[in-house]
Image 1: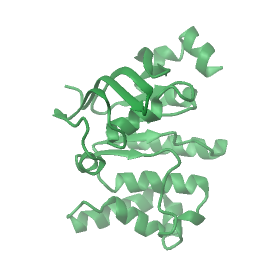
Image 2: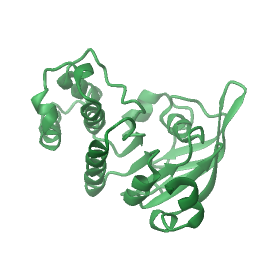
Image 3: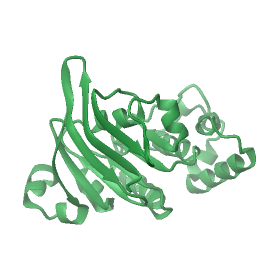
Length: 235
């Protein structure tokens, strides 16, 4: 059984159909990437899974539980955590307060302190800015903070929405090293990323979305060499 199963998902924005029967799976330990042009439905898919949008049809199953239409806080409580596009950190709170916010639902205080220490070992720049307002961080630092906040939930699956958006090339490489580190720790990742080349390099499996539908799928290594994918998305 896949850890996350999405079956025939339809989602609307008012009268506009944004998703048209999207189906895919994420297995334990996998990085699965959704690629496609702007407006293809990638972010809508993540928002539908995380409870920010309510699907009009289809099923979302996480670890054997049908979570279709659940509130986002209930979904997060299961360990299915989204790092949204644009990071959406709380800019008026400090770095430490943002990280503590990620552990809000947890009761294991000692383990929370250990996880904070692990975050600071992984993201040394965040330790240096512990009491700094999050809104004053650079774009790359804010993305590290958003990922760190997600890790503080002790996720069973992380959904990353455009983690490299707006970052300089050197910082993009750093963000993908962080994604590789998360993968190495065995945490499954559902990755939405405009940089299709980078996404396919790190993913195990990928799905290509066009206008709200899955039009191609396969092993990421195969898609990197598929002439249709190279021409349309890899330039």
